Structures are given as C-alpha cells and as structure tokens.
Length: 255
Image 1 (cartoon, helix red, strand yellow):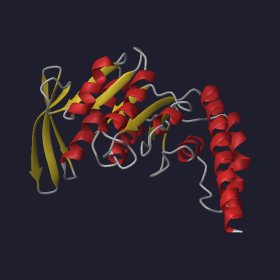
Image 2: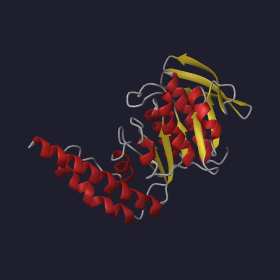
Image 3: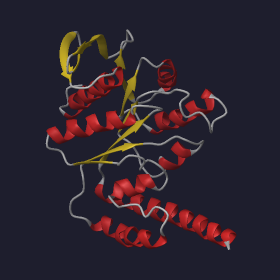
Image 4: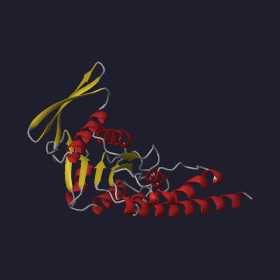
C-alpha cells in the first residue's frame, strides 16, 4: 500500500512539473513580461525584495516569487500566481484548473522578479527551458549548498548555463567581490555590471559605516560618489541596495 501511494505521488509530481511548465511557457509567450532572475548561494531573498521595491516605486506592475517558490514546480506557480497544493491531491485541483485561464488574462505584470533554485545538478537547465531572463543578478557562489554537487566546478556549471542563455542585448548584475562569479563572467555575451569593493566594479563600494539604526555606505558610479543610508545591518543588505541602484538606472535608461 505504501509503495502504491508513493508511486502515485511520484506520478502526480511528474504531471504537475510538465503541465505547469507547459502552461507557464505559453503564458510567457503571450504576455511577454521582462524577467529578472536572481541566482546565488545566499542573499537571493533580500536582493529580490529590493528589486521589486525599486520597480514598484516607479509604478511598474511587478510580481516576485514567494520564498521557496523557485523550483521546477514552485517557479511556474509563481509566474502563474497560483498556490501550492503541497502534499494534498485535493488542494492541487484549483491550481490545475486555474492555470490555463492565466493565458487569457487581460493584465499581466510588466516585470517578473524570480529567484532560481540550484540545489541539485540540472536545476538551472530545466528552469531555463521555462523562463528566458532579460536581466540576471548573481549574488554569490559559495559552498553553502554544495551537498548535491561533486565540487564547486560542478556547481559553477549551473551559473554558466544562466550566463550562456543571455545575449548581448541582455544584462548581468553581479557581485564582483566573489571571485568565482568574476571568472564565470569573463565569457559573458551579455553586458555585465559589477558591484562591490572590487576595484573594477561599476558600482564600487568605498566604505560602509554602522549607524544607530542601520548603515550608511558610499559607492562610486561613473566617477560620482553617492551616499546612501539603509535601516538594516549587514554587508549583504548593502549589496542588495547596490543591486536596487543598478535596477533603477536600468529602468530609467541611465546605464
């Protein structure tokens, strides 16, 4: 009995994966949103939050995937704005029935801000068959989720796939303080903007100072030094703020 139940769950998962993936592809072809993909071992959530905020402040319609909706099933659910049924077949029925209706929506977000999960080899390859980012944001490549990979080189291949799907008309915003990211982007066809303390960063951090209620930081962009204050602590929040600045420049066509 247990074997039968597990088999049905497996079949159900395969069905959902390909059904939702197909509907999502059609929806993206019909509505043609600008996709901003956020990838990396850490800091995806905060970066995604800042990017979404930057776009909403400029009155753009934007949708971002909820936490953990960045996998083969979760990502399509995020694009389609559908809830997960988790482990209940009955709870999946509304999502299955509503999914095709998303094709015929009159209004759809102009921007999708989607984090991409890379916990297993091949994750990026599958997700990139569903979405085609216009902008790729790389936060960090580290050993944090290395368990399913042989080594860092195999993990790096996931990010190389993301790099290679972009064209010269696309944009990569990357953490230049991470040497692995810099190595990967040497062969990028897309335009690359770096942020961080690294000397050749486009958004070059000069200094970070702790304040009573957060942090202040100074960065340089096109020979101009700019001061910013944020009400959060930690360098990762400064990085997220720099990504926000880059996105603002992009949407205002000032890059």
